[in-house]
Amino acid sequence: MDGSKEIPKTKTVYVDIGHCTSGEKNPLGVGGSDRGFQGPGYTECDINQGVGRKLMKELDNMGFYVVPTWNPDKPPAPVPKADDLQRRIDTVNRDVAKYGDDSIYISVHHDSDKTGRGGQCVYFDATRPNDARKLAETIQGSAWQTREHDKSPLCILPDTATGKGYLDGLRKTNSIGILVEGANVLNSRDRALMPMSEFQDKEAKALAQGIWNYFKLKPGAERPYSPAIRQRFGL
Ligand SMILES: [Zn+2]
Image 1 (cartoon, rainbow, N blue to C red):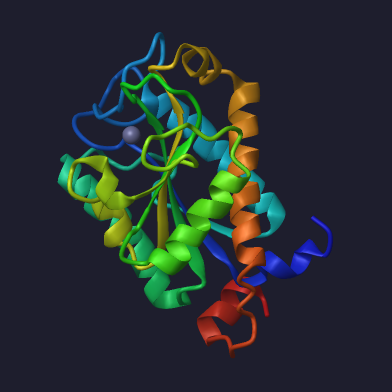
Image 2 (cartoon, protein in one colour):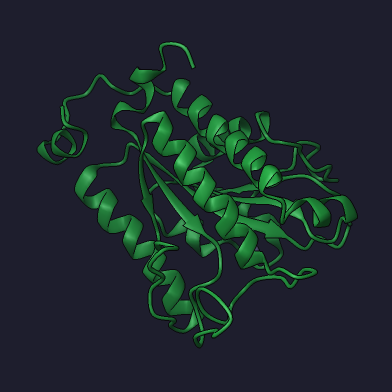
């Protein structure tokens, strides 16, 4: 990361840890009843939190301004799933409205892909094909491993490829959005790796590097900064 100090100077990264905060309170752990997939001794929520925390730390160390859609140390009260998604979207959009659009949004998930293939896939907001696809490419370019996929060997997929319409969280946030499926619980190797701290470190570092590489291609520091941006970044 030579000469790196320049890149993150005015960049904000919204980190969305998938699941965990909707439904009724789960007495066994942080967050609500929506815990994503159930793995052997862990849930998707557990893995998303592990990787999400490490990713936020990496980005912070790189100098990015990191805004989580919810704070895993202080999880918000559980609400119905649709309200939970809206709450995440509102957090991002309020911040974008105040500080401008020099930002990206990354939603951290892990997959239960019945093909059984291992590795990482990424979905991008197909309504912003230039920026969001570019971000997806840099993320996959540094991924701990990309998953093979019939439609895209690099597993970079438009948000319409989910089979559920499109991903609301990507389209409704006013930032450059991607959703990462970091590994696949239906792949035996990934299933064993996912709960390991060393693996989560590796995955998070690779994601942070991909974000770094994206902003490196897109400096965008030439315009005058708003007073709010100047205040946030101490300019
Ligand atoms: Zn998920």
